[in-house]
Length: 520
Image (cartoon, rainbow, N blue to C red; front, side, top):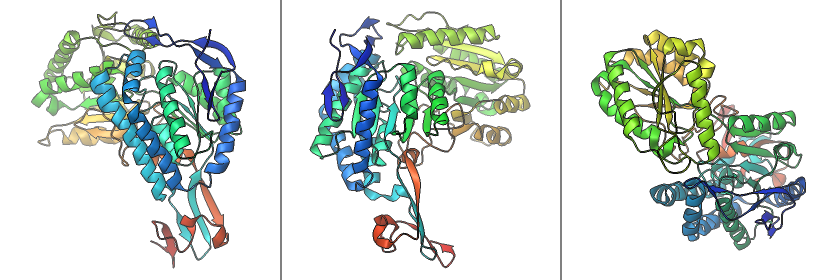
């Protein structure tokens, strides 16, 4: 059977494969027609060689040239918008509009253009000039980057289009894209757009390459290869940690986005004042997109009260009455059931759902579970089992001290939210809980659900383990996201003519300078 070609060194070619696979339409559970190869090490070796060759040219390439490629790529994506929306809808069951066409695709091209602007300015390199000691430093490209994309954002986090891709390219690195098996056809169109943009802007052949799938051993071999500079991975905790163990053993940087329950805390007074409104806001956030966001609010913490009981009753009703959406794949459906079984076996009470859904294709009923604070504290690790999808766990603490104890046992998360009364009546409670939650999350929100992730330079889409593999970096936000794929390069007593332009004394751009012992 003929399989789709892989992109190696600027050319589409027949894969050296060890097997094949097909994507599924989650709404019908039917296999889609194209057949894709599972690449052997022969393919991986070839893309690594081509990426290494491309990096030799890119590491001294002006940021303006990289910017031209990223802008041409964004233009090419917009020219193929209808094709991309059509195939992504087939492969993921995500709505064509507004989700794919009106939200995710403009976000994707927007962050590519933001990355282009950062590459062109060079300010992201953070030049530091100590003229007196003739020591200078800046960030520079690290080398070929492997990008593993997730299943839930085929455009904005895709391996050949998304945030990791944009950040790696903008920092001056070629990218080896490993498609997600749920949407290989979508990724192939992005790679076609990237190839066209590379030809238009005269980029090296290996700037963007695509393989669809490998076995686990070969994936681990790739991230440890001496030709690789770094890896970006978004996906399941198990697969990500296997890659991390391999990369760490080889001393190779790897940046992971793995798992997050994103706790939302409703303080007592705000629940009493507008509990019904908050129930609607929370239900809408949790069930949006069938809950398949990495920032989905998968845990709620309240303090025992009549207002909390009314809030829980309202949320249960809304979950029960809301339509059931389609999950991204059969594996997501299976994982949801497994997570619910783990939680209920540990003592969680089912308020609604956990069974088969009444939606289309792969689905699970909108599910709400509940435990007391004491139950949570007896087994916090199990109670933080992520049920990725249209599900959440409500934790009812006996008092604020128990609520603080619950927060202190949390693993690292991408986000954490605190809702409090506007009249100040929750301020003492906030002052008790916020410092505890602050250390457990990358992004702390007030009076706002976490599901929106703005592409802003101030954004942190990261957090302590296991939300990510390192708490000091973000996967969203240019230029911050670029530093994951850069190395700090120091020049000591290097002649001016041999320095990068940004480190010379006559550099007119933004640089931190040490003059007479004072940084300016």
